[in-house]
Image (cartoon, rainbow, N blue to C red):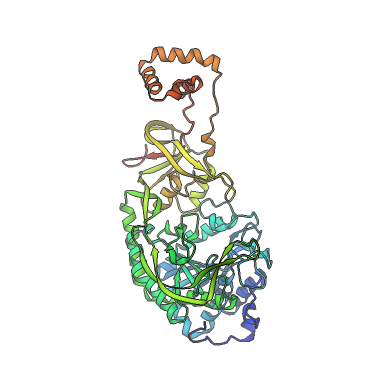
Length: 578
């Protein structure tokens, strides 16, 4: 594919390493990338601001590049001028580096081409040149085995071998902590994180993950589906880059039906959605040559900038409506499932999938026949339905001992108010009754899912210094719900932040507790009747003496009250806790 109208060729002094390679198979090193932005900042201080934006696990700073019509790099001032904010992040997976090179070129062109400078009148652009600096420094030529170039590139994991696109909620890396501070500082209207795909073969160079519209506030989901996405697809078609939704499917080949990607908050676009920011992951196709992948990414970013400017008023109105709607929202989804009863239809440009004997095993293997391209209608399943919900409390109360959780909440825009004195109040508390845990660590954690809880109202004594976060005013309500409700997919409980409450600290010796248990049953006829009912209903239980003794223990005052109790309490109001 070729560009609709190739941009002017930059002067030799301003060509990027990618542009200096006649084969178009070179991506910038970290030093070349940051050096290039430093050079731009020195030459164009009236429009481009470069600053350090916090540490990373590599020991090097994250950088923030701000492009504006008048050099204004202050978020508050930018909002007062009613400019939309487009946040572009590159190199989260440095083996997928197209966005690194495309953003260097776009930043330069926005400085040097008058025809493009007008795009900054209504939109301020914030660029993170490289997010995973650690991985970019780990340069190699082999780890992206499915990918067609460039000649050398970075590594997916960071210095702690974390995949940063699973770290947006738990924020273990310094990279994620610095990003969160930068994101909260700018609170962008649109967030774009550049990637390269894996998976099937097909004709497209560019595919796109957009924030799942079902998960967005209704006003934003309607705007995304009705205005923003159609304009992006049309703009890319005009630039000779026909685009399709990200190619994810359950069958053997894409014709079985594309499925929208459910980006939970561990991912960048899922995190952004918690703050009413529309997120995108442009995913170029790994089997296309590096040069068209870079050019298509450049054109996507330019198209995004053009579209956000053209739709500035509609975008602002949709975000304002989303904010107003969330202020009144009383029930929040926590988990989602694909609705396979409804679908859209896309005209998909693919290649016929066939099988042939494997040269390795002799067994049938899949291949895509590029001599047999096709365009045909394919179902696209793009609706998700909530499967678990939670009501909105007036506040969450977090015991002061959980400092790691408190630190993350503050970093992401939450205001935590310490209690000034002892408070005893009726609150809702959760007891864990069941959950599943991954058998192997995922991103350094044994992640919980399918969490089941029992809700109780208890009168709890809180101490001075315990932390209250109210879900009112400017609080990041959805973020708080999806991190502090333990049944949410990417809650702090799911990531293991509260695992210590799952371990029982005290128990009993059988021969000692036998006599205590017998006395308990004599003094509590209702407890004895419950035990008898269980025996009648469950013969295996009736034949198991230790199980019956354990049941009595668990239903007695001797069982420690904090075992399996979620330490975060729900204050239902009204007003503030006194």
